[in-house]
Length: 504
Image 1 (tube, one colour):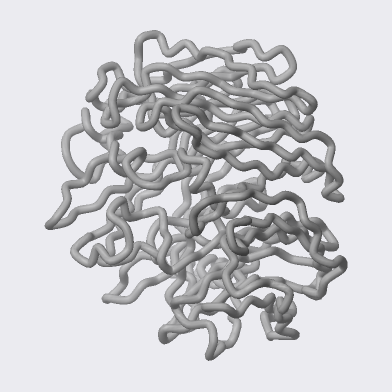
Image 2: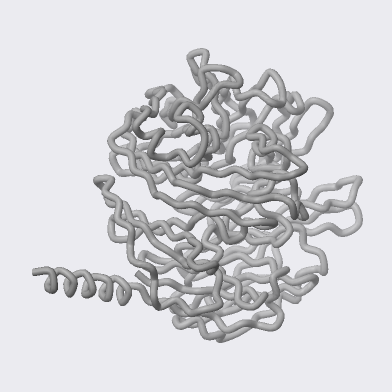
């Protein structure tokens, strides 16, 4: 019986390894570690990746085995491009880019096909006159889940006001409505969540208010703008004299709800107690439910890597919210902190003291990689005395009112010095399961590992991927799922950036 058991285990390991097919791109001499890139997506049997190095811009086209088919130079782009965004459709993609010429910032768009070739000449969407040299982008591009609504907006600071200019367009980038809205803003006290666009065309975000720069949010508003509205509508979210931070907003288009999630606290500088959830009806702009779901001591003991059970949640950040058809959702939060000789780790500095997704000026695609711009360090590039820690992942299934159905923990322990490009995880959703891909140290080498969680919360640690090629170090947090069973993961090979396709 023991022999049969061993044979069965070996067979399962072999089948698991064969179930995942991995192919790699060949290193390109131009694709050094200073390369900027974004994975655009899959078009028929082509995989398109945008790349930029210095003043060179191009789209590389790969086949199913990631052999390079073409390298399309984007000669229409100026030498200095401030930002590029892509909105992908089954057969084409819109490339929306911005650049500065003298004192004017231009926001233009071109349409590209599945071969990376232009389908249109550059289309001017908007311009802004500024009195300074823009080192960062001025415009932000967002789209609805069904991609039938596209918005380009800018936020300009004027005294104690933010001036929002929004351009709502259809999938052909035909203008539907343009708005200019002024709103009061007190610097260093107000913080914004993600800016989102619903399938109905509603522009939505949250605005939080703090008593000081190093406090949690004590007042929270849900801010919305309808398709043809020229003003914002604010709805106060009742926090029941509690505090929140790092608010994550999600639009449930199927059930026409807005879902707000955050860790919550009982005191201004207290410990995180659990997860706050507010559900707001999109059509009536009314509160459906508000729930403070406390995390019990047994779960705290299972997720903590350091400190006491009381402080176990303090270094967790919400990374993903996955919607379910019944109005519930899955929430993933990751344990992250840094240690440095020159700076002590501070959650408030990380969230609010430096450019982050709370500011409309620093809202970037999660799939965009820039060697000098990563979300891990609160101290900026060059903090070579900083060590980054990315530890356990908390996964919680909550119902439509924000109450727990089950919780699970993906156990991991990651750290690195100087850079966190190889830390954190990629999330792949396939076969009704959550697949977590992340690196672990094995004999001083990084090994890509995978864990899966099914719909009942059962966790399986998969065998190591034995068909990985040596020398490739994966950067999972920049990965992008491009089909129901495929994910593209950037990796480093001898100081060159390459890409791997993992097929499940």
